[in-house]
Amino acid sequence: MGFFFDGSLFFVMFYLIFFLVLATFVVTAVRGIAQWSRNNASPLLTVPARVVAKRTRVGRNGTHNTGYHTYTRYYATFQVESGDRMELNLPGEEYGLLVEGDEGTLSFQGTRYKGFERRH
Image 1: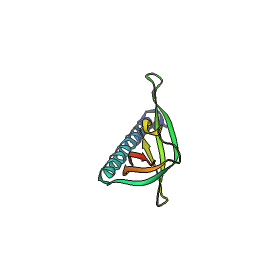
Image 2 (image 1 turned 180 degrees about the vertical axis):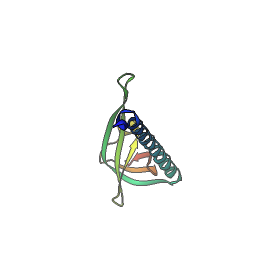
Image 3 (image 1 turned 120 degrees about the vertical axis):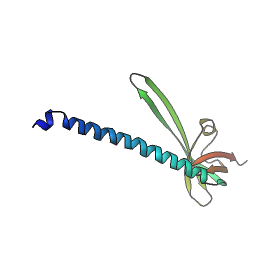
Image 4 (image 1 turned 90 degrees about the vertical axis):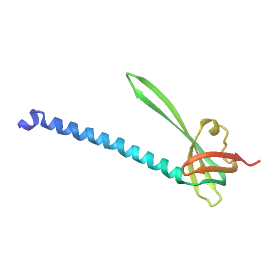
């Protein structure tokens, strides 16, 4: 009975949660660095493609005390001649210029969008 009231359980749970949160941050950072490295090692490809879908994701950062910052991420799904599809994150300025069904030349490096030139 003393175990629950002398604070030992509290400290065990505190350190367990602390290390779980720390491990989550470390794993996320390692995954991000690994993806960045894979993208850098990938060749820059330019292929014929068609825009098949567009979407946005709106999120919010911050806390009640510091205020919130909203952000929007822009994504387009491209289909290449082989029938494969890939969804890439792209700048809002370019997102606004794309229309589903556009055909042209897609440039990308790994998972990095490099550009899309519309066929006339």
